[in-house]
Length: 447
Image (cartoon, rainbow, N blue to C red):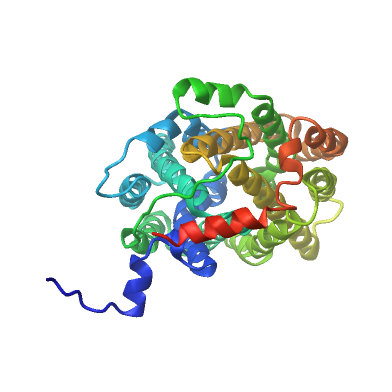
């Protein structure tokens, strides 16, 4: 008879499946995993437009950077393959997460040899390849979150996901932009590749287990086959979700990159913009993600998102004031950026909580998450391209005037959307079945 040696507390904790971990350890796992996903995106999404602008590249071309995020928008196309094909010895989700975590640092190391001032084509090609790898890994990671997070953990789980998103943007778009200002292109990219490799180490250790089972919010819609996936996309509830995601992308993301290029055109250096993101932007956004997880459990979604549209009007109005030159004081710039990031954190955390709730409870959780999240990314890069074109054609002031009025116009329609097509999600987090939660928790420990 083989006698096993006692394991240390650390080894025992790492070897247990994440669904059996206590909530803090489970959420820490997803924090580290999502941080590795979003740090490179933060660099290419926030820092790269500033770097391009410093090289004299026009706004319309910078707006085309959003096309490089097409793999994120097309996640619904390959999410079914991520759900179905995997290596049994490695794990359903781990089969996709680990290879992508090896590929991304390798791509960044190659990108270090192609600075944008020598041509944008290699940069575009390599960033597109990196985003493809990141999107594949993100599908598997999102599916794993939907698989193992208990109903009472999902609002906070979405906050952790978006908190990691904004932390990644703070690191990638703030710290690494400052490093670029002092070190240049190649050293910054090599350091970024090394940082991501370090973050990926815990993902090689965890042991994957069987997902939880429950009744889905969209229980009448199945997506276990290609035909049923199409039915899910065509359902009225999913259509309502698509409308919500499109509206939120329009009011939140159309002016997002324009605000940072505006700061550059106002004379702020990349280092100052990086410091602004680091201290006045991302920390507030991270707080906003936690606040969003609290609000979605205490306020009906129709009230939260309609008031969010009203708040985006105030943020767009502040940018309108900056663009017109009425007020460009440092405190006002910090207040405008901080207010935008706070609102972004609240609303995006709430959106992902609803996506997670709508995806959970089905064997094709990653497919559902990929469909909804893919449309969210599609809406985002479409809004950013629109913003780049509008900024080049109309100017900063006119763009933010239009966004102010559009945000106000959507307050009532968003409220009505949750009263009709999205009624199952309006109060999804306001009440859970205690008996169901107890039974699910008991099963999740039986690994």
